[in-house]
Length: 286
Ligand code: PRP
Ligand code: ZN
Image 1 (spheres, rainbow, N blue to C red):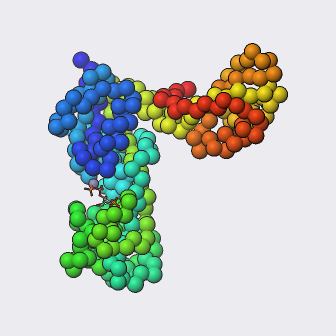
Image 2: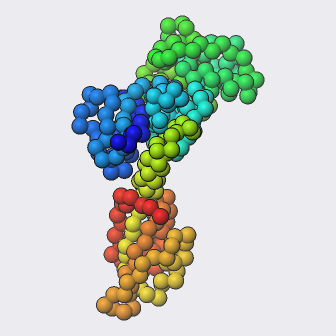
């Protein structure tokens, strides 16, 4: 039997739900028992390992897992020889310096000689080195936000997503030093049969991510404006055009990039487009 590809996913936390969602959108069935630490997909050679996100890069490096979904922050902090296979775009957050309300912060120079608590010493050190600031880094694995109030640190450097954790600990974010999103990482020395499975999975992930970037749009248009519509839709392949009973009109179907969608819609209306229908696309492959 084919050896499954082993995918490490955060057991519970900021990344878990969206990580599972993207795999589910790939048509892979799993999740019959949410208390399991490991399980096999029903219809694809994939085994899930549910782990602490901080441990995932090392487990991949040590060949316990083959690939994994982590924040880019974890990948860069640990600096292991792994590959980023895809930037998945979700779980956007930043690594920021935060200080207690009374701290007079005027820039990274204000940290000279101070004690900064963080779980990201590697990223922080390289930033401080870049700007020539000497500080004492106090490495801690969790609950960084309480260190100023118990007198362990003058400032912290921690991940910020909504900012709620900082606010509830009386800290203000003063300087983002690094930005992160979720990435799919893996070893570059996968066995051949696992590489084949990985490529099948990547093709599905790409189709899911691409579909999220586009909308499918259908509308009726006075035939005389067809040329102008082709220009608006620009870079896309030519739209599908169907004649209508009234031969001065045509029906048009095409895909539009999500980020250009509202501009395109306004321009279509100006050209007299009617009956505009827009739908999400579930999967999209070349
Ligand atoms: C980060 C960070 C904060 C929280 C900030 O933890 O350490 O605790 O998120 O989020 P907020 O700005 O929305 O309040 P993470 O999710 O990485 O968990 P972990 O530290 O347990 O790995
Ligand atoms: Zn973590």
